[in-house]
Image (cartoon, rainbow, N blue to C red):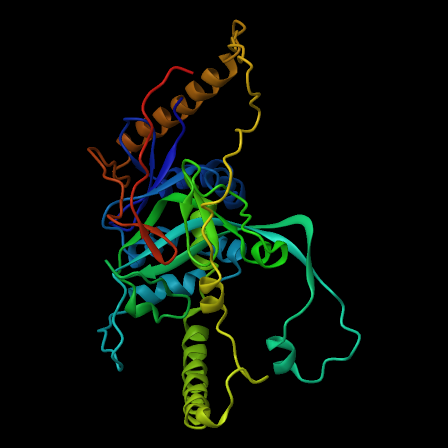
Length: 389
């Protein structure tokens, strides 16, 4: 059934696509809406739920330009000064880096969910005076039997072929304005096993590592990979959630951060010089969590294969038959036809209005040549053979 989709086009215009019909600028449809109802909020709340795509060769600057007609609206829903970002990309500038760091090759928005065991820590009777000692000491803990489930969008930078993920939340806008931006067509569900392995003291993971579709991730994690579609609200929220309130506050933060990094580097150098005088395994030893968890990772080769959920050994499952009542999908087809009629009306108006630019012809969705899963570059999953079910 046809539903209108939104495309962030590489010429800086947000357009509507309905089936194989010519594409219309969303701003043109908005101008018609304002003449009849004049309510920006009701108009945008409808389109915020539409499936959204990026056109090939879309850059960060053109992405922001697409949002310009509704900058004030997006400012309210993101708590970010979106108009300030839009104005910033209009300024002429030349990028002259004052350091040896290299630019990212592209930005990518993706959605991930982390599932980890909920852990209860035994309450300590004595008061905490030495924070460093407290953080580096081993503590008594237990699994509660429940899980912590956290899902969120991320916008990160990458360099092609480099197994690393870069934060762009405080990168100066001038350094990424011409950088390509993609929507990952995959979402990820990570299962963390670190506390499970430590507390149960046995090689028990949430998922069977030999199970079909289970992917090994980093640091006692397993992952499932699935397809995903994005709505306009997802895309806008994902991008600005990782940005400072406005470019000026980002620049101020960067200066403070540079000063902190220099101070931390000086402290690190001083500690390194006196490292030989500190005995190995002393209470002041700082533990690298990533390194520790990585070294504790075990294989699940001894894990027994479990029966699939819902299956009963020795029993033949009955074939399910589906019956469809007459007219069951009538309301859906009527809604789809209504949407198409409305779009055809907009097209007729646009043909009579010289100010509306109708885009005719093919449009290629942006697709990154690398499939990224945080800091990993992964290969495509191998599908099974066809089988009647």
